[in-house]
Length: 454
Image 1 (cartoon, helix red, strand yellow):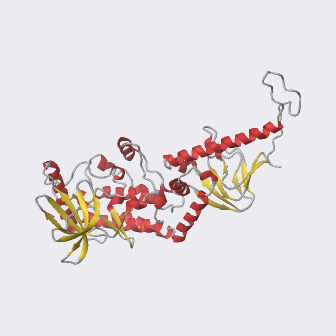
Image 2: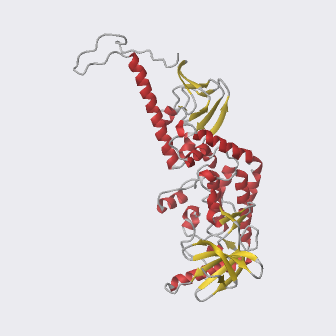
Image 3: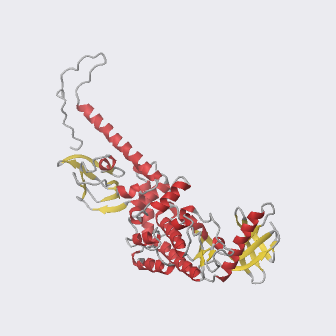
């Protein structure tokens, strides 16, 4: 590693990519730390070198005129025969891509604050004639004070250039999962494409998943263009209801119905601030996670799957003698007893009692045709109940959905086995292997009086 890049003293390497290396350096003139991105202009591929140079010129030219507290500043740009480098503001922090997994989500008030500031930064950039075109978590840095810094304007489109005249538009840029429908279709772009991508980032930071997912790029592109955006509150019922219309508008496929600018997006986010969860709610989430982690139902779940389960379910604290499920009611809702005990009955007669880690209502969920509750369930004491809505579960990750289905099926089979054991104790003597008829005895009429609860 070179000791200097121009006048800039190299301290250490910050990151490496396919075409560039970023170093932490010291600017001796300004006596400050800076990030220096070095782009190697190889002689083996002249076309690629020209393309890299175009990107370099774009980033340095556009970046120098963007002066906003939430956009990484460009201090200097130098072109040499074998390389070019950009000197940028050094942001001591973490990229947002570290906070989009279900087990590492930020508290809601922090997410809203970060996205709010990004909205205003993109609004400023657009008024300067610039759109980013590659907004994604990896391109948004977060300082220790929760200040977002949008970086990597190297793929930006300079709207002030005349069409067809040294255009900086390069096909194929952007990250597919965060691309707007019009970007995928290679339509002309405006600021609304960045707002769509920022909406995807917000969706992921609130739910731990992308609005559209697929196993291959072709399917992903089809879904982004054609499918409706999932309800964010169905995926995480604990979110304020006001966020649902905001996300739907940000991810609107019809440009006329999408947010027209970042300021409008930010204004709507500000309107739901009063509904935002505080820090103690985050601590409560952690306590709830630990309680679920200890339940037998979640033994085969990974930690990340337990977190996702917590996000899509409703945590209910119930008093004694409350009806959880009512026999004959329609609906595929089921749930898991976290603490306390319940009584399960049918036609007014008690069948059995269940405690922590047990499931109720699973038959209505699992049955392919008959979506009604076959039993009534009443709490016997103060009970904590994790309510699972089948619609929300259907929108969860494939891993969580499969884990729930397997665990529920296993529980049903276990209960059938227990019922068979009880019936066997009260049944008639079995036919012998040689075909000898069973002798007459108790239960020979084939009727049993099954009672699991005295």
